[in-house]
Length: 125
Ligand SMILES: [Zn+2]
Image 1 (tube, helix red, strand yellow):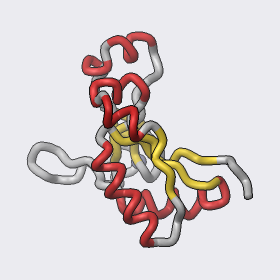
Image 2: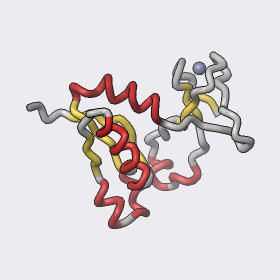
Image 3: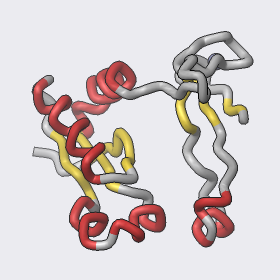
Image 4: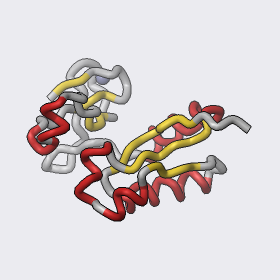
């Protein structure tokens, strides 16, 4: 058996990662939560280490990405309307991964929220 893992997603809270893990397992995909216990012991460290990582075996990668894209919640504006991608008008928009800058590592809360279109990959604010 191979020991290569693919990180499908990262979660700030262990509880969110556990919910997603359960959904993956019900689809027959084996899931590993990396740094789960580190985050449990000290939730404040979650930001610094990038949260709890949901990982799958490399051979489950495609299946896992498809499932995750189906299950994840897309971003909505304060009125509860789905945020629309300015490039392709798709309403499957996600929070973009933060830039891995030193600034972000020091002050994660000052990083402006950026969105990423799940359809075309456009990143916008
Ligand atoms: Zn788009």
